Length: 516
Ligand code: KIV
Ligand code: ZN
Image (cartoon, rainbow, N blue to C red; front, side, top):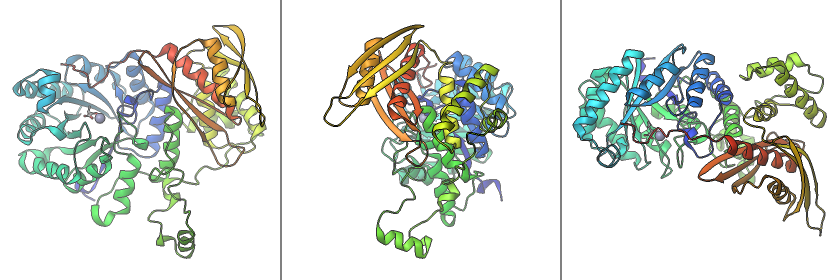
């Protein structure tokens, strides 16, 4: 198959996805997601924005050390400091890419950059050349290309390719484009730019009008050979084009696209669950491919048709995207070595024996309550074991809640605050409400609760409930998560986790701030 027939999948869950409020990921979490993306055979993983903060830098470095099959990429504005940070973070990567960008739309150049178009071209060329001094594989993006003039795009892209960019990315940064128009733009650029054959054209579409996937596919039809996307469509504002939808659309409609990705689709659902559990962003039940209802047939007519001949109503097989792949992998008799080895396969390692022992003790406790332990249970358990490494200013020591028909629910908690145990009791409209109020009496955080959600991690009523609590304080947003077979306890854990995250939430540089 020729180069033209291969669609490069560029995942930016850990960079653009991380720009969703509250979706920030720790270094360990990024390693786990990186490993899952590598298993799925994603071509390029954008692991972050190295210049954003020391934490981002270290996370990219760690992903580069641990993920060897995919190309690892860091974003960098077209400025010296960003390019140098990106290069340094990627030093140990087997395959490294620097993705540098500058805004090219009249509105961004005038009001954000306060630069003349000539200066923008000069800065872009400078950045691409400097990036090429560090790595072979350089991608250049024209931020807000969707609203940029074609003449100017042709000029700056030709110059960027001459300077050494091997991938040219056309982002619809504000999600403004419409498929036919966007497809036409890609075709025009490829036709008009004299050296366009020296680069792969890529697109990066945002979902503000719900068109990110449609726009990306229109671009593919018109010659784009890389799509930038995220798991579950996570990303800034309404998100990015979703990886699972793009991959399955091009695969299911091979007849139209005549293009192949290298993706092993059987890892899609487990990776979706992993990203949801780490970020605390639940997947809506009717979400294409990875939503709980995506392959569920409710109506009698549909069920009858599917039983007679599956293709009457199903265009894809659930098992092809990893539904049903969650096998019972461990139980109460599994030992520490098996536990450790399975976690290693999932990309999880522990820095100390004590940390491993603590996680193993939690596993045994869970196995007593729930006989079949799945990968998803292990992922949730590990997330919790790692919560303490964020901050343990707040710790849940005990919880007793009471609810009965006709009575006001109450909850009594003991919370340790910087090592000092405090007890409080509260009532509420339900046991979760009462629990949160009781914790607040001790914590006095004054944070606003933005979101509370519960999802069953696996099937059955013995499943663990995974709770997300999104808190906001002074403009900082965090997502706490907690899992337990008792959802009131899971809720309390999630609230405490969010409080600890607020303690350490650090200012990070946003990549799309004026960096020039
Ligand atoms: O949306 C966008 O334009 C981006 C760029 C930095 C590629 O995320
Ligand atoms: Zn973006």
